[in-house]
Structures are given as structure tokens and as C-alpha cells.
Length: 268
Figure 1 (cartoon, rainbow, N blue to C red):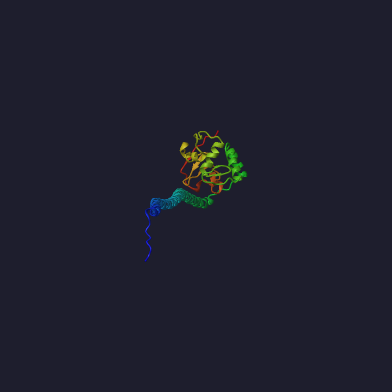
Figure 2 (cartoon, helix red, strand yellow):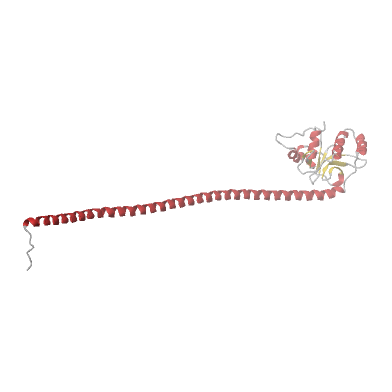
């Protein structure tokens, strides 16, 4: 038969206190754990949120960089477009200039062909004239010696033919050469308006001088091809004209073509 193990009330009190203490400790532990759980969850959530925010910020920065790249490319394209437009306008201007140059060259070619054709016809009407017979001619027509001598001197210098030319170095066409001689010899009524060129003035030479049907030595004879030549009356060997032609300064028989008209020149 076992002995009884019942404790007296004095012995049970420590046991009860120990149990109570263990339960309180367990309760405190649970309380701490329960209180730490929300904090832990909050920390985890904050960390997760911070990670997402950082990733989102990186994506935003990447998008900003990409947008900046596209903006730069757009600006470059705009500049290139402006450059291409400028180049296109420049090319259009060049094309227009080339067209004008081609037109001008065609005009010059037509004039050259016309001058060549006229030169062939004129070659058949050339009259021989040198200093010796010019001196003999001048002795029969006093007052013509100076003009004739100057014309022969310029022929000797081989002044060339040039459409629209205005100087000895550049050359002359027939009208501008006649105007040059009139101004050099200081013929009356031959003046240039302010700003008017020798070539421009020569085109109105026919209208500036009064007409005559009885030309004298030194007067101007105008021909359909646009020639303005100085007339020299020579009843002995036949009248001739002297002036600028595609051959240079040349003497031609007056009968080389029918004149459009004559204009008297008042020499000083």
C-alpha cells in the first residue's frame, strides 16, 4: 500500500506561485510576439513598397532619358528638314540660274551664227584700204583725214568685235563702236544721259540724229543687220563705209546692202 503524497497547504503555495509565474511569463511572451507581428509586417511592407518605388523611379528615369533622346532626335530631324529645305531652295535657284545661262548661251550662239553668216556675206563686199590710198582720198576730201586716220589706226590695233562691248580692251559691236568714235571726236549732239552706258546709248543712235538723203563724208550709214558705219563719198572709185564688223574695223563697198537710212554728223 502506497504512502499518501498529498501536500500540506504550506507546501502547495510555492508550486502555485511558480505556475502563476510561468503562465504570466508565457502571457508576456505571447503579448510581445503579438505586438511585434504588426511591426514586422509593417517593416516588410515598407521594404517591399520602397523596393517598388525605387524600381518605379528607375523606370521613370529611363523613360525620361528615352524621352530626351527622342526629343533630341526630333530636334535633329527638324534641323535636317530645314537644311534640306534650304538646300532645295538653293538647288532650285541654281537650276534657274543654269536655265538662264543656257538661254543666254543660246542667244549668244544665235548671235554668233548670225554674225558668221553676215561675215560671210560681208567678206564679198570688203574694199581694200590702206594708209597710202587713205591719204590720197583725204587729200581730195579735206576734213576727212582725221576721222579716216583714227579709224585706220584702230584697225591696225586689231580692236575686236564684241556684242555689247564698250571699250578698246573689251571690243565693240558696230553701234557701240560708232558711238565711241563720235564721243572721241566730240561730235555735236552726242551726249550720254546720267547712268546711261555707251552700249545703251548706241542703240538709240539712229533716233538721236536727224535723217538725211544726201550723206556726206563722215556721216553715218545704218544697215538692216544693225551696222552703223561711217560713210565716205568717193565718186572716183565708188563710195564706201568704214566701221566695226565681225572682221574688226573694215572698209566695205557702200553697195554691200541697201542702207536703212543716213544720219548727218556735225564734227567739231
